[in-house]
Amino acid sequence: MDDFNYHEPRTLAEAAVVLHAARNGVYIAGGMSLIPALKHRRVRPSDLIDLRLIDGLAGIRREADTLVIGAMTKHADVAGLDIVRNSIPDLARLVGEMADPSVRNRATLGGSIAHADPASDYPPALLALEAIIVTDTRRIAAAEFFTGPFTTGLRKGEIITAVNFPIPDNAAYVKFANVASRYAIVGVFVARRAGKVCVAVTGAKPCVFRFGEMERALENSFTPDAIKAIVMSAQGLTADIHGTPEYRAHLIGVMAQRAVASAAAKPRPA
Amino acid sequence: MARVSIKVNGKDEACEIKPRTLLVEFLRDHLGLTGTHVGCDTTQCGCCIVLIDGKAVNSCTMLAVQANGADVTTIEGLADGGKLHPMQAAFREHHALQCGFCTPGFIMSALELVAKKKNPTEADIRYGLLGNMCRCTGYENIIKAVKAGAEAMARVG
Ligand SMILES: Cc1cc2nc3c(=O)[nH]c(=O)nc-3n(C[C@H](O)[C@H](O)[C@H](O)COP(=O)(O)OP(=O)(O)OC[C@H]3O[C@@H](n4cnc5c(N)ncnc54)[C@H](O)[C@@H]3O)c2cc1C
Ligand code: FES
Ligand code: FES
Image (cartoon, rainbow over the protein chains, first blue to last red):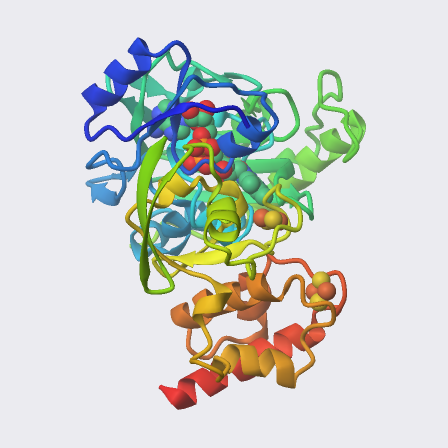
């Protein structure tokens, strides 16, 4: 790892000033993705700016029909706290199946979505729930946020402060996980709110995406049978040591049907 | 250089370090606490797990500066003089180690697990130890040891 200067700003404004003044400033949250990148010298910051002492970035609250999760909230809290289980149970379950306990004790929501790994589990939840990403300067719809592998719509120096998750009527996430890392080989998040259905897929392409054909079929009939005949084309799907594009296309159908069955059986908690 | 002040096993340690120093390097190289091991250096094996403010974390994937002001417990902080901690004693009793390289990490993970749930089921234990790997034992005796360790801890109070 190269040397860098380390900063612990107390406010968002101070953090942004330090970042813009640095030759190559990088924010650090849990460090669970960034520190491995520093070790490999894939990222070589002149200045590392730690967000951990900034007030108000961690914590979860419910505002009417929205669950607001602070960017520095650790995976362990999203997975473990009743406030999440009682409003979007499958979000808690999704996060509880990410990585392992010691990673979940450090990794954060903001770091996860800023990192935007194409096999990551949070992005399909944000996309299917039509979440809003709140930053120090603006609000970004999830559909505009995830733009490619490890790339997002964040501007230089912009800091994610929270994510607003509208609470759905039904939701479920089912993934076929890599047994070693537990990242998704394919994961499908299905959500229904006020009759509108969103189906978001992770792990299968360089960027998380929505599967419109399934959404329309599910709006007519929210049952696994309604999407049985819908097969994703293998064209453009990821090929790697975990699976061929054809295998992933098949998994998308299977995971989506399981997610619909699970979501239909679990209406929104009172 | 950066100044850190970290409480390690109850003792305040204040040092000037390079910001790039990993927590595990701080523990092993600066403080000589070599019970915390580095198996993979890539957040996979759990050999480097220590408790920070009671939570199990991988010290190979944390900078020491990120632990500034925190309370760290390593395997060296568990025994009471010559008397093993009940979880350590359970690992010995149940043959939960062969080479022992993974043991400190397993024990630290087990302690967070038991702090969250006094009487963990086998399923709780397997879920709680997902981040720890052992290349010797085949895990069965580790699961038994954690169960017995949890029971012993409940008896001690
Ligand atoms: C062994 C292991 C297994 C894993 N398994 C899974 C898995 O199964 N599923 C899964 O989805 N993920 C998994 N992860 C990834 C984990 O969720 C990551 O650690 C997470 O993606 C990054 O979060 P972090 O808080 O550690 O971010 P960091 O590593 O601190 O930062 C990551 C990036 O985000 C930027 N950043 C951080 N916070 C902000 C912010 N508030 N505003 C703007 N930019 C910010 C940083 O500058 C950096 O570029 C795994 C990681 C490990 C180590
Ligand atoms: S050495 Fe840290 S997880 Fe393996
Ligand atoms: S006892 Fe040898 S690795 Fe676990």
